[in-house]
Length: 69
Image 1 (cartoon, rainbow, N blue to C red):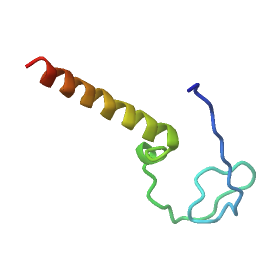
Image 2 (cartoon, one colour; image 1 turned 60 degrees about the vertical axis):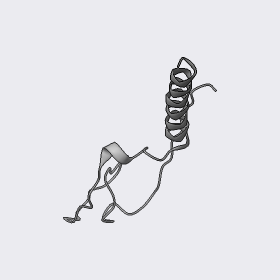
Image 3 (tube, rainbow, N blue to C red; image 1 turned 45 degrees about the vertical axis):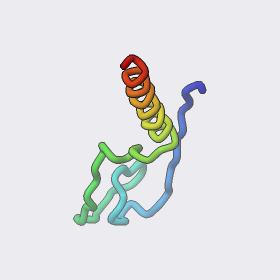
Image 4 (cartoon, helix red, strand yellow; image 1 turned 90 degrees about the vertical axis):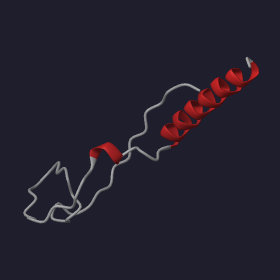
């Protein structure tokens, strides 16, 4: 499993309420949707793999503790 980069771009009107970054033009919309940067990739495939690897490590540790009894 090698690391890789994934980039996704959505093209939409600059005045759309969900627009956060404008490359060309100006955002005249005063309404901003809540945007929690900590949750952007919280459910990505890579993050799920990392979570499962951590769970496996925890289970392996518990099994080794039980076996040492």
